[in-house]
Length: 251
Image 1 (cartoon, rainbow, N blue to C red):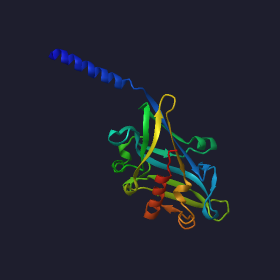
Image 2: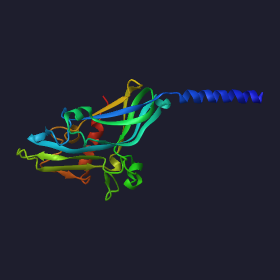
Image 3: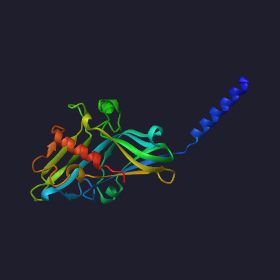
Image 4: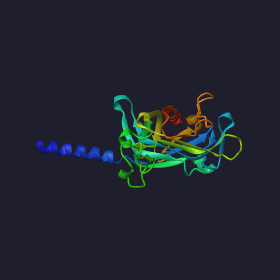
């Protein structure tokens, strides 16, 4: 009887493991499409209308996402499938209209196909990772750069460019805004059905950079008054990070 029970349990375990192992897996593509006031976001080669007649050009724009998950189910039955611990969304190579329309693309491998109920990511570098440093990550790795040695942490987002504040078309005013800090890290969840299959495996996020630095006609970064901040002015850091967290959308 014990021998028969052992054979039966062995068969059940083998069957369950076989079923689990046969769930097909695919590569999932994450695309992040940037705009500025609705226009495709390009580095270097495009200028954009800003507040008070100021025009700006971008040279660099990037930001981190941490703990990226696909979510399955809800409530006590929620499951999470890890896509990546951390990624850097970097627009440095987006320098043409065709590249801007395509956006920044990342690939996550071996993700189980299925129907998911949402997507989750932390905006910035999660505190446990922010406590590390580039020496812990042989390149290429998202965390082998963008580190403040003097501040013991990573730059969560960089916005760099030039402004034409006097309508001279010389774009002589340099803009540098580097924002970060554990206090400004925030997980965000987008609840929306996502079907991952062999035919469809794209996750598309959108972001209008104007929404990060210009909220309305009263609340915006005035480049005639301030052009540089390295997370010293906490009001500016909070403004940029809050707007980034609210502005990143999963359509």
